[in-house]
Length: 144
Picture 1 (spheres, rainbow, N blue to C red):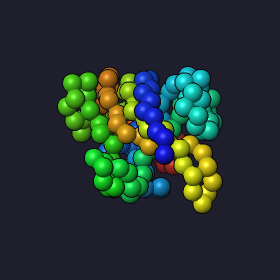
Picture 2 (picture 1 turned 90 degrees about the horizontal axis):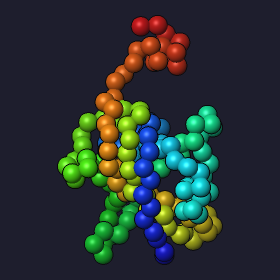
Picture 3 (picture 1 turned 90 degrees about the vertical axis):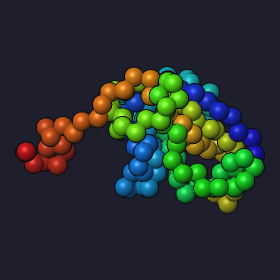
């Protein structure tokens, strides 16, 4: 199975890289990149419906991958600062990150195509995550 690494740099939002999201159980992050860079990979995804140009990359922590010649559970992606030091802080919307994404060919009972796996996140410019009660109230219809 052929695979290739791609690197994308840009502002991110909705980074769920330390803990998987509650709905799908996957790590994910949306990054604003040029659509041409995305289509170079051969992936078939589309930019976000809001017209902002964000693409979503995911990692299933339960997926089996090859690590050092052995099949192992993927786990979470590496999250590092530019010096290679692990980042444990939550990543706020607007942070600038570089994503390492593995694109691979698949041929299984679902068909043939290209898949991807978020391999690592380098946090180049961190915007600290904050919970904004005002924005929450707009989404759930409750004033705080």
